[in-house]
Amino acid sequence: EIVMTQTPLSLSVTPGQPASISCKSSQSLLHSDGKTYLYWYLQKPGQSPQLLIYEVSNRSSAVSDRFSGSGSGTDFTLKISRVEADDVGVYYCMQSIQLPQTFGQGTKVEIQ
Amino acid sequence: EVQLVQSGAEVKKPGESLKISCKASGYSFSTHWIGWVRQMPGKGLEWMGIIYPGDSDTRYSPSFQGQVTISADKSITTAYLQWSSLKASDTAMYYCARGYCSSTTCYTASDHWGQGTLVTVSS
Image (cartoon, rainbow over all chains, first blue to last red; front, side, top):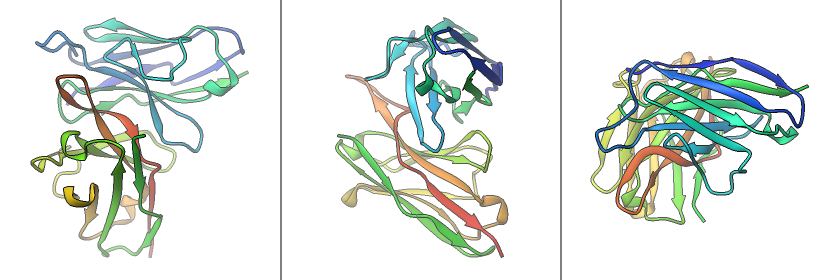
């Protein structure tokens, strides 16, 4: 199965400052159909996960444009341009090019 | 509006059986994959398996194959996750999650999640 590795595992950010999370996969997530099956989810405290980004860089509906995704092949990044208090939680990357789908370990984002 | 409403929390003893549910509404149930994800206390997300209700095509993670059964009833737009003999290590929050579709293709990755069902297994 594909192993997803996130760094850092925790992040403390000052409101208004940027934040960045890295996700690396053990195999390329580029499919022969030309799409790359890498996703980002946020699980806020006490809530279900919510989809932020699909296929590397597409924001899900109602997701703030402060969130952006980038990368290719095996290296991916989620960036928050200006962190707000409501962004706290655990961020997960996930691949779906191959079953079983696998998640990264999660990155816990806290506000300083 | 897409909604996935899961059944309520359960407290069971080791060796007991259990079936939890996920009632879907607001979209075409038959044409979207629907899967299950485990989250053990204080831990991350683990993908368990998925079903395509249209033809009942079901895929399991090797970690969960033989440990659980995933099913769906199209007539009542409900997906299920069941155990025949629970263990204490099955104590976790379980989420159902719907696969998303583009204009031409449906995928296994999830865009909507249920609220979770907490399963506690203790003697």
